[in-house]
Image (tube, rainbow, N blue to C red):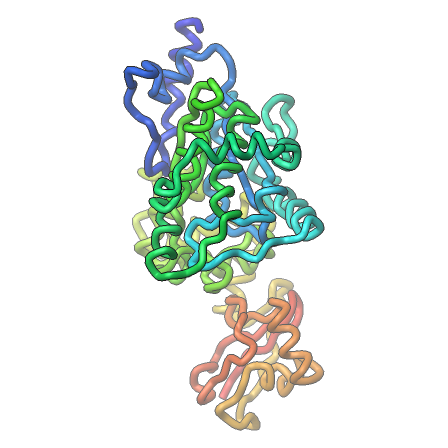
Length: 411
């Protein structure tokens, strides 16, 4: 590699460590004097192959999932090749990491449908257009054709003790919860993906270190140069307490409309703002506003722009301000008021949806909540049986169904 090219790569490595908890291994060893990623980048006269595996076990991706995709895009922008592996085979097993019980095994049809939704949601993040910058591979390509001899070869690379050292397995074993043999295959199959695509680097959350390390071991077993692992933090959710999760309701989905995304992000807890800016944006951290409120607004506007464009983000910001401060919808029309005096409390929200005229019946109200179409002051409601003890808790709040039906609740 020429001195100019090496210098250019090294000068552009500020993006490499941003938002990264650990790069491993980080020191040269006697086995491999190039066991340092900066040295590998500088001394390899070709684009690195950077692997990120996704198992399409659901339909939605949230901002927490976007972090390794953003790092993958950084590698693309630096001239390297992103290898996105859709785990259409491993998804049928399910990653046991962090699970206290066995995952439900998905059907091939479910996995295929989920995979399509995943790819659509990450299009705003990755470069799908530049030739040579993205490979999309499905691991059924090599895993479905493994014969028993090859599977036995994989199994022989790891002991039961090593498997039980994996955090999730160790906890389940200690608690007496069942661990099925097919779950032991998951880290090996995921690791074999690295062999199949000859990965130089693999990205993942901090909970993926075991799986990435297995990939290194298997590459060494098959006489390949072991990959590097880049581990990124697990994003705390909008509640400021637990990791972002759809099941906990503290998430911001990539497929959500601009107003919903903005309304959630502008309420990000103050102590999470620095982390969100570092992990979810490219803004210089030293140039952020001092005011927490201005930071919240800038964060929301920046992230919504990434997924919906600047125009929609600006409209969402204005709409959010109108709903809260001016009592108007995104189109500028006055929000009608609904008086709660005729509602008998305690009252379930689906009943209020019916009484206010937003839904034709309580049953429709329940279905709209279940379908994710109901918001209260911009926050999506997921609890079908959400109950309010008195009208004071709803005073002045905007109840919304879909994008165009609003009422402001007054006592």
